Image (cartoon, rainbow, N blue to C red):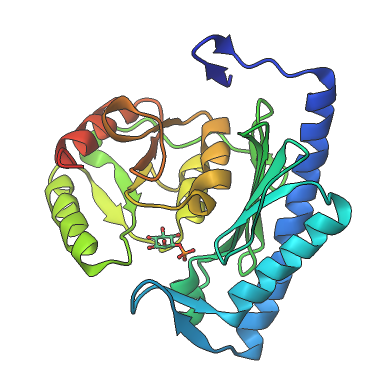
Length: 277
Ligand code: LIP
């Protein structure tokens, strides 16, 4: 149940109907864009860099985002959009789309089949639906707020009950070398407290891996909203806990998610290890 300080968020029947329509459109968008990304991977592409030598982008990222924007504005011209590759427009409809055309771009450029199109949709500023689609595996993770999380039509219920010492935890690192070095120190100290670490390279799929029980937990510092907006809804709708640093909500400072049994110990360890953030 989604709540605010004042208690559960109640949506009107009209908003519930709209959320259902937006959820279906999000799936259509993510899966359609995924086919473009998959075709682009096979056709070949140039690779450019953005904020650092490791922050890469291709014309496929940009073409996929353009396609997503066109589809959205053709059907819902008053909606707002925020995309990783520069799409940004204000909403006059109370609906905004948050798009990562290719999450896991480095994996995409290397031919690693661990990348996804991530589409989230907000209604009145709250994410109400999302889809994360891996075009290589064909796996389509999706959720609508209050209606559960699914892989295709299979309901997801999060990971096993496990203690910190046995937990397999995913993470990722920033594109800034200095930040990465500091983040590596955190991982080095966390590893002695957990079972193992996984660095799979796409935040949206890492979040879905926790929802599907393939990871016991995941955390990352410094993500962008387009990396986590859809995956965070999917993992929380799968019954998992989410947190930021020191009990704050998940966001760009830190996104941490885990199954209910593991969450308190993992979140406490992460807040202690990231005390300087
Ligand atoms: C990536 C994230 C990943 C993170 C990378 C990068 P991109 O997003 O999905 O978790 O560790 O540094 O931010 O840039 O491939 O869309």
